[in-house]
Amino acid sequence: MQFQLAHQGLQWSDSYFILMGAWNTIRLAACATLIGTVLGIFVGWLRSVSRTARFVTSPLIDILRSVPMVIQLILMNSFLAMAGFGTSPFWFGALALSAWMAAVTAEVARSAFLAVPGQFRRSARSLGMTYPQEFIHISMPLAYRAGLTSWIGLVLSLIKDSSLAGVIGYVEFTRNAQNLMTRTHETWLLLFGIGLFYFVICYPVSRYSRYLERKVLV
Image (cartoon, rainbow, N blue to C red; front, side, top):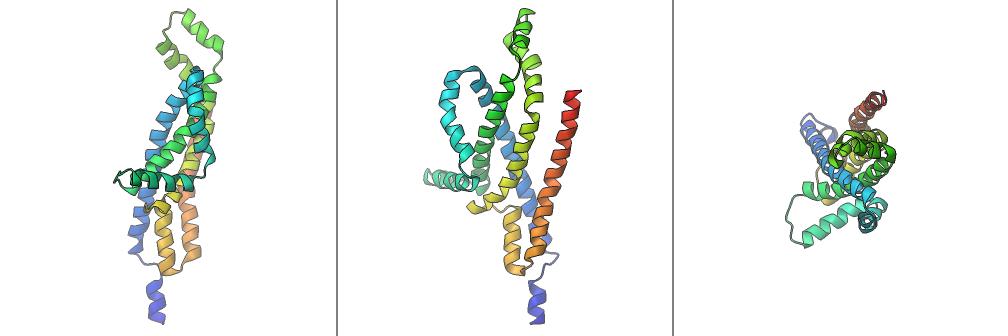
């Protein structure tokens, strides 16, 4: 019995699975953040300048913002599998998380672009700037200042929501920790480790966002 209990405990060989899960979580969150942010900024800009784009995209954005992420992951996995897309759980999870990130970022970007005073745009055009020049040198910097804080909050939420990708078979950090709980029964220790892992990732992002806020407000 003593040998069996010792065998069930955490071992150094388990560190490989923990590190692999940590890397999988980081790359999933990074991929979804990049894709979702770029797409969300584009959609948000369209929604700020076109009523038609706002009307067309509103239903999908409302759905993605309202439906729980775990349901979105399951539905995305099921629909793509039935459609014959034989891709990996990583891309199923990345697509679902990217779609959510794009939807919420679009609203942040739309409000940020609308927060740019109209007289600034008109003044830039009266000075001879083309629309692209005004957008790059006037609208984008001011919208960046207006939407940075809200976007950082979305990134932190995305990092934490990536832990739900285990429901579609993606082996991320939380999923690996759950497997180790089943084998070792070290529930409290592993739960503490999960919380510490996400804190270590999210806290530097939060601190760096405060640095960026101070820098852009100077």
